[in-house]
Amino acid sequence: MAKELWKGNEAVAEAAIKAGCRFFFGYPITPQNEIPEYMAMKMPQIDGCFLQAESEVAAINMVYGAAGAGARVMTSSSSPGISLKQEGITYIAGAELPCVIVNMVRGGPGLGGIQPAQSDYFQSCKGGGHGDYRLVVLAPASVQEAVDLTQEAFDIADQYRNPVLILGDGMIGQMMEPVEFTEVKKRKLPEKTWATVGTKGKRKTNVINSLFIDPADCERHNFHLFEKYAEIEKNEIKVEEYNLEGAEIVFAAYGTTARIVKNAINSLAKEGIKAGLIRPITLWPFPAKAFEKAAEQAGVKAFMSVEMSMGQMVEDVKLSVNGKKPVYFYGRTGGMFPTPKAIAEEAKKILGGAK
Image (tube, rainbow, N blue to C red):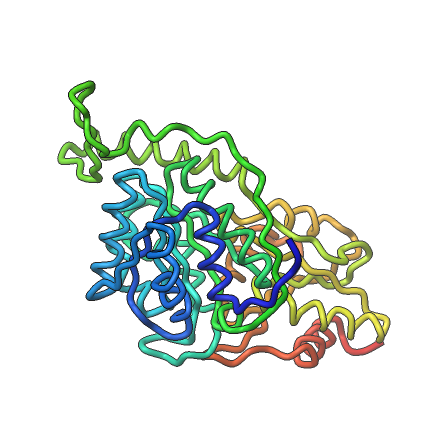
Protein backbone atom coordinates (compact mmCIF):
# COMPACT_ATOMS: atom_id res chain seq x y z
CA MET A 1 0.00 0.00 0.00
CA ALA A 2 1.32 3.46 -0.90
CA LYS A 3 1.89 6.02 1.84
CA GLU A 4 -0.93 8.46 2.52
CA LEU A 5 -1.04 11.66 4.53
CA TRP A 6 -2.95 11.12 7.78
CA LYS A 7 -3.60 13.15 10.91
CA GLY A 8 -2.30 11.28 13.97
CA ASN A 9 -5.61 10.83 15.78
CA GLU A 10 -7.43 9.60 12.69
CA ALA A 11 -4.56 7.26 11.81
CA VAL A 12 -4.73 5.69 15.29
CA ALA A 13 -8.48 5.15 14.89
CA GLU A 14 -8.04 3.54 11.46
CA ALA A 15 -5.22 1.35 12.80
CA ALA A 16 -7.52 0.10 15.57
CA ILE A 17 -10.19 -0.79 13.03
CA LYS A 18 -7.65 -2.65 10.89
CA ALA A 19 -6.61 -4.55 14.04
CA GLY A 20 -10.17 -5.81 14.45
CA CYS A 21 -11.53 -3.29 16.95
CA ARG A 22 -15.31 -3.21 16.57
CA PHE A 23 -16.32 -1.47 19.80
CA PHE A 24 -15.40 2.07 20.81
CA PHE A 25 -16.68 3.94 23.85
CA GLY A 26 -15.49 7.44 24.58
CA TYR A 27 -16.20 11.02 25.55
CA PRO A 28 -14.93 14.22 23.86
CA ILE A 29 -11.84 16.06 25.08
CA THR A 30 -9.18 18.05 23.22
CA PRO A 31 -6.66 17.15 21.75
CA GLN A 32 -7.91 13.65 20.90
CA ASN A 33 -11.37 14.45 19.55
CA GLU A 34 -10.65 13.24 16.03
CA ILE A 35 -10.44 9.65 17.35
CA PRO A 36 -14.09 9.42 18.50
CA GLU A 37 -15.16 11.54 15.51
CA TYR A 38 -13.53 9.06 13.13
CA MET A 39 -14.95 6.08 15.02
CA ALA A 40 -18.43 7.63 14.95
CA MET A 41 -18.19 7.84 11.17
CA LYS A 42 -16.56 4.46 10.48
CA MET A 43 -18.01 2.00 13.00
CA PRO A 44 -21.57 1.97 11.53
CA GLN A 45 -20.03 1.19 8.11
CA ILE A 46 -18.36 -2.01 9.38
CA ASP A 47 -21.11 -3.30 11.70
CA GLY A 48 -19.18 -2.00 14.69
CA CYS A 49 -20.41 -0.09 17.73
CA PHE A 50 -19.57 3.52 18.51
CA LEU A 51 -21.12 5.00 21.61
CA GLN A 52 -20.46 8.41 23.11
CA ALA A 53 -20.90 7.76 26.79
CA GLU A 54 -22.31 10.26 29.26
CA SER A 55 -18.88 10.54 30.92
CA GLU A 56 -15.37 9.10 30.94
CA VAL A 57 -16.36 6.95 33.93
CA ALA A 58 -19.22 5.42 31.95
CA ALA A 59 -17.01 4.90 28.90
CA ILE A 60 -14.33 2.88 30.70
CA ASN A 61 -16.97 0.67 32.33
CA MET A 62 -18.47 -0.01 28.90
CA VAL A 63 -14.98 -1.08 27.85
CA TYR A 64 -14.98 -3.49 30.81
CA GLY A 65 -18.24 -5.02 29.59
CA ALA A 66 -17.20 -5.42 25.94
CA ALA A 67 -13.76 -6.78 26.90
CA GLY A 68 -15.42 -9.25 29.28
CA ALA A 69 -17.41 -10.59 26.34
CA GLY A 70 -14.18 -11.15 24.41
CA ALA A 71 -14.52 -8.22 21.98
CA ARG A 72 -11.67 -6.10 20.70
CA VAL A 73 -12.48 -2.74 22.27
CA MET A 74 -10.82 0.65 22.60
CA THR A 75 -11.34 3.96 24.35
CA SER A 76 -9.43 7.22 24.05
CA SER A 77 -9.12 10.43 26.00
CA SER A 78 -6.65 13.06 27.16
CA SER A 79 -5.11 13.62 30.57
CA PRO A 80 -8.03 14.80 32.77
CA GLY A 81 -10.31 12.27 31.06
CA ILE A 82 -7.83 9.45 31.66
CA SER A 83 -7.73 10.48 35.33
CA LEU A 84 -11.49 9.95 35.49
CA LYS A 85 -11.08 6.47 33.99
CA GLN A 86 -8.59 5.25 36.62
CA GLU A 87 -11.08 3.33 38.78
CA GLY A 88 -12.30 1.43 35.73
CA ILE A 89 -8.75 0.81 34.52
CA THR A 90 -7.73 -0.85 37.78
CA TYR A 91 -10.90 -2.99 37.65
CA ILE A 92 -10.01 -4.03 34.11
CA ALA A 93 -6.43 -4.86 35.12
CA GLY A 94 -7.65 -6.79 38.17
CA ALA A 95 -10.16 -8.75 36.10
CA GLU A 96 -7.48 -9.44 33.46
CA LEU A 97 -9.39 -8.02 30.52
CA PRO A 98 -7.68 -7.11 27.25
CA CYS A 99 -8.37 -3.66 25.84
CA VAL A 100 -6.56 -0.67 24.34
CA ILE A 101 -6.62 2.80 25.88
CA VAL A 102 -5.26 5.88 24.07
CA ASN A 103 -4.08 8.96 25.96
CA MET A 104 -3.10 12.00 23.88
CA VAL A 105 -1.50 13.86 26.75
CA ARG A 106 -2.06 17.54 27.41
CA GLY A 107 -0.65 19.94 30.01
CA GLY A 108 -1.69 19.75 33.64
CA PRO A 109 -2.25 19.38 36.54
CA GLY A 110 -5.96 20.07 36.91
CA LEU A 111 -7.68 21.11 33.72
CA GLY A 112 -4.33 22.47 32.54
CA GLY A 113 -4.30 23.37 28.85
CA ILE A 114 -4.73 21.69 25.48
CA GLN A 115 -1.11 21.80 24.30
CA PRO A 116 1.12 18.65 24.21
CA ALA A 117 2.79 17.34 27.34
CA GLN A 118 4.35 14.20 28.84
CA SER A 119 3.31 14.74 32.43
CA ASP A 120 1.15 11.59 32.63
CA TYR A 121 4.18 9.26 32.84
CA PHE A 122 3.71 8.56 36.55
CA GLN A 123 -0.01 7.95 36.11
CA SER A 124 0.60 5.60 33.19
CA CYS A 125 3.62 3.64 34.40
CA LYS A 126 3.35 3.68 38.18
CA GLY A 127 -0.37 2.95 38.44
CA GLY A 128 -2.91 5.75 38.34
CA GLY A 129 -5.49 3.64 40.16
CA HIS A 130 -5.30 1.58 43.34
CA GLY A 131 -3.63 -1.76 43.93
CA ASP A 132 -0.61 -3.58 42.51
CA TYR A 133 -1.10 -3.66 38.75
CA ARG A 134 0.63 -2.75 35.51
CA LEU A 135 -0.40 -1.48 32.11
CA VAL A 136 1.72 -2.15 29.05
CA VAL A 137 2.60 1.41 27.98
CA LEU A 138 3.62 2.12 24.37
CA ALA A 139 5.00 5.55 23.42
CA PRO A 140 5.06 6.34 19.68
CA ALA A 141 7.36 9.03 18.29
CA SER A 142 5.67 9.42 14.89
CA VAL A 143 2.28 8.92 13.30
CA GLN A 144 3.61 5.82 11.52
CA GLU A 145 4.79 4.34 14.80
CA ALA A 146 1.46 5.23 16.42
CA VAL A 147 -0.27 3.21 13.69
CA ASP A 148 2.05 0.23 14.07
CA LEU A 149 1.92 0.21 17.87
CA THR A 150 -1.87 0.58 17.96
CA GLN A 151 -2.28 -2.48 15.76
CA GLU A 152 0.18 -4.47 17.85
CA ALA A 153 -1.41 -3.26 21.10
CA PHE A 154 -4.52 -5.37 20.50
CA ASP A 155 -2.43 -8.52 20.09
CA ILE A 156 -0.40 -7.74 23.22
CA ALA A 157 -3.61 -7.16 25.17
CA ASP A 158 -5.09 -10.47 23.99
CA GLN A 159 -1.88 -12.44 24.53
CA TYR A 160 -1.52 -11.41 28.17
CA ARG A 161 -5.14 -10.56 29.07
CA ASN A 162 -4.00 -7.08 30.07
CA PRO A 163 -4.91 -3.49 29.18
CA VAL A 164 -2.45 -1.69 26.90
CA LEU A 165 -2.04 2.09 26.93
CA ILE A 166 -0.91 4.09 23.90
CA LEU A 167 0.74 7.16 25.43
CA GLY A 168 0.87 9.86 22.79
CA ASP A 169 0.62 13.62 23.15
CA GLY A 170 -1.22 16.49 21.51
CA MET A 171 1.56 16.85 18.94
CA ILE A 172 1.33 13.23 17.75
CA GLY A 173 -2.46 13.46 17.68
CA GLN A 174 -2.65 16.65 15.65
CA MET A 175 0.29 16.44 13.26
CA MET A 176 -0.06 15.03 9.75
CA GLU A 177 2.56 12.62 8.37
CA PRO A 178 2.84 10.03 5.60
CA VAL A 179 1.60 6.64 6.81
CA GLU A 180 1.55 3.15 5.36
CA PHE A 181 -0.90 0.66 6.86
CA THR A 182 0.95 -2.64 6.83
CA GLU A 183 -0.13 -5.88 8.44
CA VAL A 184 1.51 -6.44 11.81
CA LYS A 185 3.25 -9.77 12.32
CA LYS A 186 0.63 -12.14 13.67
CA ARG A 187 1.01 -13.70 17.10
CA LYS A 188 -0.31 -17.06 18.19
CA LEU A 189 -3.04 -15.86 20.52
CA PRO A 190 -4.85 -17.95 23.13
CA GLU A 191 -8.52 -18.70 22.66
CA LYS A 192 -10.78 -16.55 24.84
CA THR A 193 -12.28 -19.44 26.79
CA TRP A 194 -12.82 -17.08 29.74
CA ALA A 195 -15.17 -14.70 27.87
CA THR A 196 -18.79 -14.29 28.92
CA VAL A 197 -20.40 -15.26 25.62
CA GLY A 198 -23.08 -17.66 26.91
CA THR A 199 -22.71 -21.29 27.94
CA LYS A 200 -25.14 -22.85 25.42
CA GLY A 201 -25.65 -25.41 28.17
CA LYS A 202 -22.23 -26.96 27.51
CA ARG A 203 -20.04 -25.59 30.31
CA LYS A 204 -20.01 -23.79 33.63
CA THR A 205 -20.70 -20.08 33.67
CA ASN A 206 -17.69 -17.77 33.19
CA VAL A 207 -17.43 -15.02 35.78
CA ILE A 208 -15.49 -11.78 35.22
CA ASN A 209 -14.52 -10.37 38.58
CA SER A 210 -11.78 -8.60 40.54
CA LEU A 211 -13.32 -8.97 44.03
CA PHE A 212 -11.63 -11.29 46.54
CA ILE A 213 -13.16 -11.27 50.04
CA ASP A 214 -10.59 -13.72 51.42
CA PRO A 215 -7.22 -11.89 51.69
CA ALA A 216 -5.35 -15.11 50.92
CA ASP A 217 -7.25 -15.37 47.62
CA CYS A 218 -6.48 -11.73 46.84
CA GLU A 219 -2.80 -12.26 47.56
CA ARG A 220 -2.70 -15.34 45.32
CA HIS A 221 -4.30 -13.31 42.55
CA ASN A 222 -1.65 -10.60 42.93
CA PHE A 223 1.10 -13.23 42.76
CA HIS A 224 -0.49 -14.56 39.58
CA LEU A 225 -0.63 -11.08 38.05
CA PHE A 226 3.04 -10.46 38.80
CA GLU A 227 4.05 -13.77 37.24
CA LYS A 228 2.31 -12.48 34.11
CA TYR A 229 4.03 -9.10 34.38
CA ALA A 230 7.39 -10.87 34.60
CA GLU A 231 6.60 -12.60 31.29
CA ILE A 232 5.73 -9.24 29.73
CA GLU A 233 9.02 -7.78 30.97
CA LYS A 234 10.87 -10.72 29.44
CA ASN A 235 9.15 -10.58 26.05
CA GLU A 236 7.83 -7.12 25.24
CA ILE A 237 10.53 -4.49 25.85
CA LYS A 238 10.99 -2.14 22.89
CA VAL A 239 13.76 0.47 22.71
CA GLU A 240 15.65 2.51 20.13
CA GLU A 241 19.37 3.14 20.65
CA TYR A 242 20.65 6.01 18.53
CA ASN A 243 24.26 7.13 18.00
CA LEU A 244 25.52 5.56 21.24
CA GLU A 245 28.94 4.52 19.94
CA GLY A 246 31.53 6.91 21.34
CA ALA A 247 28.90 9.08 23.06
CA GLU A 248 30.04 11.39 25.84
CA ILE A 249 26.50 12.15 26.96
CA VAL A 250 23.46 9.93 26.53
CA PHE A 251 20.01 11.48 26.32
CA ALA A 252 16.88 9.68 27.48
CA ALA A 253 13.68 10.78 25.77
CA TYR A 254 10.47 9.27 24.43
CA GLY A 255 7.72 10.20 22.03
CA THR A 256 7.94 13.47 20.13
CA THR A 257 10.59 14.81 22.52
CA ALA A 258 12.97 12.13 21.22
CA ARG A 259 12.65 13.62 17.73
CA ILE A 260 13.67 17.03 19.07
CA VAL A 261 16.60 15.42 20.90
CA LYS A 262 17.88 13.87 17.65
CA ASN A 263 18.13 17.36 16.18
CA ALA A 264 20.09 18.46 19.27
CA ILE A 265 22.44 15.48 18.79
CA ASN A 266 23.08 16.53 15.18
CA SER A 267 23.75 20.09 16.32
CA LEU A 268 26.22 18.92 18.98
CA ALA A 269 28.02 16.73 16.45
CA LYS A 270 28.81 19.84 14.37
CA GLU A 271 30.60 21.21 17.44
CA GLY A 272 32.60 18.02 17.96
CA ILE A 273 30.49 16.71 20.85
CA LYS A 274 29.36 13.10 20.58
CA ALA A 275 25.91 12.47 22.02
CA GLY A 276 23.55 9.51 21.84
CA LEU A 277 19.95 8.69 22.65
CA ILE A 278 18.12 5.87 24.35
CA ARG A 279 14.44 6.08 23.42
CA PRO A 280 12.12 3.83 25.41
CA ILE A 281 9.25 2.72 23.16
CA THR A 282 7.76 0.65 25.96
CA LEU A 283 7.63 2.94 28.99
CA TRP A 284 6.47 -0.13 30.87
CA PRO A 285 8.16 -2.51 30.73
CA PHE A 286 11.03 -0.01 30.95
CA PRO A 287 14.21 -0.85 29.00
CA ALA A 288 16.48 -0.68 32.05
CA LYS A 289 19.16 -2.93 30.54
CA ALA A 290 19.81 -0.46 27.72
CA PHE A 291 20.69 2.18 30.31
CA GLU A 292 22.72 -0.27 32.40
CA LYS A 293 24.77 -1.19 29.32
CA ALA A 294 25.34 2.45 28.32
CA ALA A 295 26.42 3.30 31.86
CA GLU A 296 29.20 0.70 31.54
CA GLN A 297 30.72 2.53 28.55
CA ALA A 298 33.91 4.23 29.70
CA GLY A 299 33.40 7.24 27.41
CA VAL A 300 29.92 8.08 28.72
CA LYS A 301 30.27 10.93 31.22
CA ALA A 302 26.60 11.63 31.98
CA PHE A 303 22.95 10.95 31.14
CA MET A 304 20.27 13.58 30.61
CA SER A 305 16.54 12.88 30.60
CA VAL A 306 14.64 15.32 28.39
CA GLU A 307 10.89 15.43 28.92
CA MET A 308 7.81 17.59 28.45
CA SER A 309 7.25 17.44 32.21
CA MET A 310 8.94 18.48 35.43
CA GLY A 311 10.85 15.19 35.48
CA GLN A 312 9.06 11.85 35.74
CA MET A 313 10.86 9.32 33.54
CA VAL A 314 14.14 10.63 34.98
CA GLU A 315 13.44 8.56 38.10
CA ASP A 316 13.48 5.33 36.07
CA VAL A 317 16.64 6.45 34.29
CA LYS A 318 18.35 7.01 37.66
CA LEU A 319 17.23 3.60 38.92
CA SER A 320 18.57 1.95 35.76
CA VAL A 321 21.91 3.78 35.76
CA ASN A 322 22.15 2.90 39.47
CA GLY A 323 24.67 5.56 40.43
CA LYS A 324 27.30 4.51 37.87
CA LYS A 325 27.11 7.89 36.10
CA PRO A 326 25.41 11.19 36.97
CA VAL A 327 21.88 11.68 35.63
CA TYR A 328 20.60 15.16 34.81
CA PHE A 329 17.21 16.48 33.77
CA TYR A 330 15.97 19.12 31.37
CA GLY A 331 12.32 19.72 30.63
CA ARG A 332 9.53 22.07 29.67
CA THR A 333 6.00 21.61 30.90
CA GLY A 334 2.44 22.88 30.83
CA GLY A 335 2.25 22.57 27.05
CA MET A 336 5.66 24.08 26.28
CA PHE A 337 8.26 21.95 24.53
CA PRO A 338 12.07 21.98 24.55
CA THR A 339 14.04 23.23 21.54
CA PRO A 340 17.11 21.53 20.04
CA LYS A 341 19.18 24.63 20.85
CA ALA A 342 18.17 24.64 24.53
CA ILE A 343 18.84 20.90 24.86
CA ALA A 344 22.27 21.27 23.26
CA GLU A 345 23.15 24.17 25.57
CA GLU A 346 22.20 22.13 28.64
CA ALA A 347 24.34 19.24 27.40
CA LYS A 348 27.33 21.56 26.93
CA LYS A 349 26.94 22.89 30.48
CA ILE A 350 27.01 19.33 31.81
CA LEU A 351 30.13 18.47 29.78
CA GLY A 352 31.93 21.66 30.80
CA GLY A 353 31.28 23.88 27.80
CA ALA A 354 31.73 23.83 24.04
CA LYS A 355 34.82 22.22 22.51
